[in-house]
Image (cartoon, rainbow, N blue to C red; front, side, top):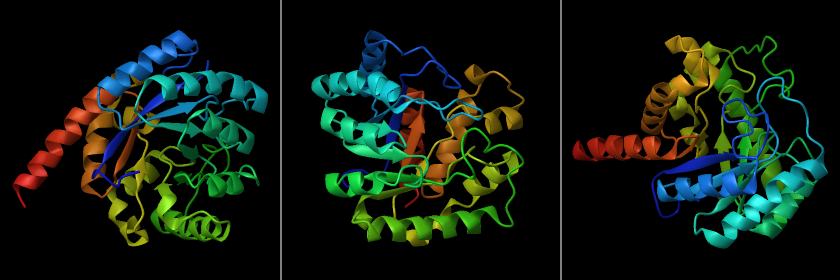
Length: 271
């Protein structure tokens, strides 16, 4: 996924009615395609299409309903745009249908734990798969999350999940890691993770960060409305890039692409 570039921005395309920031905005195929075109034009390296909200307290979605939401959008984006498509799902049936429809990556917030068939789907497809750390599950993950050492425990989780994925036939070079900002973490946990991303460098795999407009940014900045959290998102992503992250999952592609380009140019000027 990062073979030809040092970093990329992943555009979030939620075809859901209840996502925390843009729920319902892109539920129609016309609106989804307009957003996909805009993100591609703004420099998205990949578009991540999801049909089930994973915000804290979100209700589960039936597999067939999720398929009905995502497949038309994936087919349309893959047919029209050159920007690759990722499927954001923890369900093997959804992932399999999405790959047939044109998706080239699986983004699984359960790190292959949510569906026992997911690893086989990813292995057979030979596609990149993102393994995300989450404490508990979306409905309960923010109910008093506790760690002895959040960075160490996430690294241990990654090591176990990498071993499992490889044992199931997934090539190590196809694995992407995501520490799961906001998924079973307090504000302090999130800040500690972002401040210690270099601790995951020994795993020698691409690191994806998803901070876009999340609650911890609002807590730090005193901004209750997700609409006001773009500056904090950009700040977190620029610092995450300095810490070694290579994929940035965002709602606002143009702004984050520009910020990361400038940060990278400044970094290179000091080499």
